[in-house]
Length: 226
Image (cartoon, rainbow, N blue to C red; front, side, top):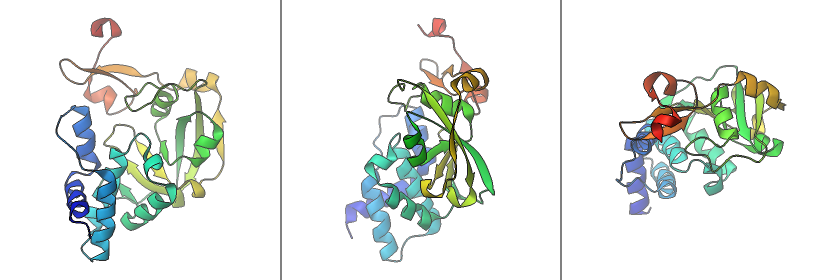
């Protein structure tokens, strides 16, 4: 086993997704673990019989957070499926008993991207933010913003990640049923528009109009920002 990989895995086990997201929200300059090395270290620890379920959860969701916004570009869906089978269903770093089904939303460019995607949300406002390219993790607005929805069965629900403020649900795309597009006229009228909040005394960000952003942070207007 690689000593560095195991070291990175143990470091990430201490942080989990919660501390990774806090690090980014506070724009700290300190380094973070190498996600890919940590995942290799996870397998090494498992082989050696030294991996506990709680540590596995923290490493896997922490790696997912580190590799956002495109975790499946760095690690294939098949490997994520195997990783979440090790952790079992989790909510952040804790055990999770998923409901029978969940109504999920995803903002993306096309139906193929929706059907193949692992990252969904229970918050319509978050899906709108991503569709319009207005979150800090978005790479830009889609030429034609689109939002899709699905009723995901329990078998599809791998994890829920709340520490990024996006009520993110990680799914196994192979277990999803019907995926349908929501008409733009409907979501533009019904789904909350993004808001601008102060992260601290000097930094603002555009965020979804949902908890925790709408309740924990002070709103700002663009006039105040600029």
